[in-house]
Amino acid sequence: MEARAPRGRHSHVGGALVSDALVDRFGRVHRDLRISLTDRCSLRCTYCMPADGVPWLASSTLLSTDELVRLARVAVGLGVTEVRLTGGEPLLRPDVVEVVAALAALRTPTGDPVDLSLTTNALRLPALAAPLRDAGLARVNVSLDTLRRTRFVELTRRDRLADTLAGIEAARVVGFSPIKLNALIMRGVNDDEIVELVDFAVERGLEMRFIEHMPLDGGHTWRREEMVTAEEILTALRARFPLEELGRDGSAPASLWRIAGTAATVGVIASVTGAFCDRCDRVRLTADGQFRNCLFAHDESDLRTLVRGGADDARLAAAMVACVARKRVGHGIDSPSFVQPLRPMSAIGG
Ligand code: SAM
Ligand code: SF4
Image (cartoon, rainbow, N blue to C red):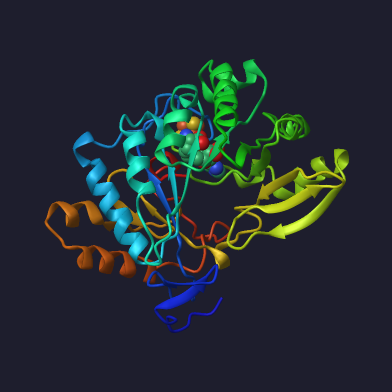
C-alpha cells in the first residue's frame, strides 16, 4: 500500500454524507471504535492471560462513564459509525448498562445511531442480556473455544462452561441478532472441535467464526509455528461441509463461507496469515483512556490526561486525528523486527 495525501473531509456511507476526518496516510478511513470497558476478567484463557492475571490498571486511571462517553461522542463526530464494547470482560464493569444507554443515545453527524455491539465471554449475560437490550445494545459476539467441560477448565482455568452456555441462550432469548461465536483454535488443544463448534452454532442459528492466535497474550507464549492457520481451519471445515466462498463484507476481518444448501455461514479470521490491514478501519480506546490506531501499536495518545486537564472537544478531536495519521501500514508480525506491544490484548480490548 502506498502512502498518499489524505482524502477530503467527507464521503458517502450507505448513501449518507459523513465526516471522514479519521483518515490515515494510506487513505484508510476509520469508522469502527473498539472501547475497552475494563482490563479485568472473570476467566484466565491461556492464550490471553497468565494464571495470575496481568498487572491491572490502577483504578484511578480508569475512565468514568462521562469521560468515556464524551470521547466516544468526539470520535462519532469524526466519522465513527460503529462502536464495539470489549475488554477484559466488559460485563464486569458495574455501570455497563448505563454506558450502553449513553452510547446508544449518540447520533452521527447525519442523525443516525451508532451500530453498537459487545464482545463477551457471556458469563454475566443471563443477568444482563435483557437490560442491555433494553438499553440499546443490538448485537453480541461471544467467545466459545470448546464445548467440553474439562477442556474449558484447562483452557480458561475456571469451571464456567455452563455459565457461558447459559449466557449464549440468554442472548438468543432476548433477541440479539446476529449472535456470533468466536473460537480461537490451538494446536493439540481444541483443533479437533472445529466441526462440533460449527454444528453447535448452526443448530442455534448462530454464526461461528474462527480466529488465528495473535502474539498479544499477557504471558508472551505465542509461537508462530504452533499457531493453527486459517488454511488448516478451512481444510477441517471442507472435510465435513460443502463450502461456498462469500468473500469479505467490507472492512470486516472474517472471510465468510456459506454451508452449501443452507443459510448458515462460517467465518475465518486470518489475522496473522492473511492480514487485512489494507482495509482496516479500526481505532481503539483503552479503559484507561489511551487512544490506539492498531492492536499492535507501540505508541498511544493519552486522551485521559487531556480530558482531565480540561481539553475542549476540538483538542480531543485533534489528538485522535493525529493518532490515526501516524498509523503504520500493517501489523508487521512477519517482519524479523516485529516486537509484541507491551500492553496485552486484555488491556487493549480485543
Ligand atoms: N472477554 C471478552 C471475550 O473473551 O470475548 C472480550 C475480550 S477478549 C480479549 C476478545 C477476543 O479476543 C476473544 O474472542 C478472544 O478469544 C480474543 N483473543 C484474546 N487473546 C487473543 C490472542 N492472543 N489472539 C487472538 N485473539 C485473542
Ligand atoms: Fe478474559 Fe476474554 Fe481474555 Fe478470555 S479472552 S481471559 S474471557 S479477556
